[in-house]
Length: 229
Image 1 (tube, helix red, strand yellow):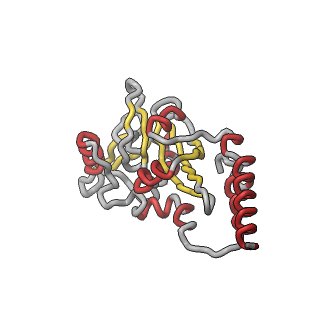
Image 2 (cartoon, one colour):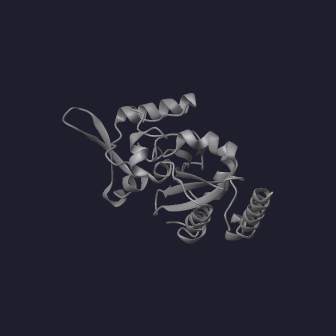
Image 3 (cartoon, rainbow, N blue to C red):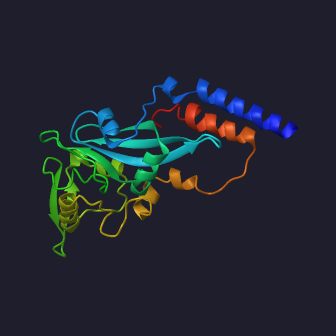
């Protein structure tokens, strides 16, 4: 009986805290579809990368996505949104990838998961093709845009003309493209190196209820303040 009372009190405490600290109170938007996400992103050209997935709660799960928004003609920004279990399940394989982009020409939009920055490759407003001694052509950004690869988390990735052709082929087939060697996505090595926070949390840890709430507040309302890191 004492255990039942204890669990009931814990449940009521959790629900009260969840209500009083509702993400809505912090201006966090709810995204449950591709169109919801597109509605939050202004301007063009722009590429949106899913960089983290997080959930809180042990009785009632709340899911969050973190996105990096890389603009063509200005710096990037990061946003956190609340979402559903179903949308998280749908998008999880595409962690580290561009899941939305809006082209500057006619404001055309695409939700096909592609390597981050695919929208900029082959666009002569941002760079050009450089031929190597092996006759392989790689994409190189102009000096003024030299930080874009860092924003995108490319690490050692240098897109070749072959990759560019594969991206266009995937667009024509409407089929996700994880890179020629599957470098991107949740199983991609570049994704794991560039956006490690999701993977760091996958190691099981034991802790008390006090630790749970402390971590909950720290990660979602104090350390991040539910804003850009």
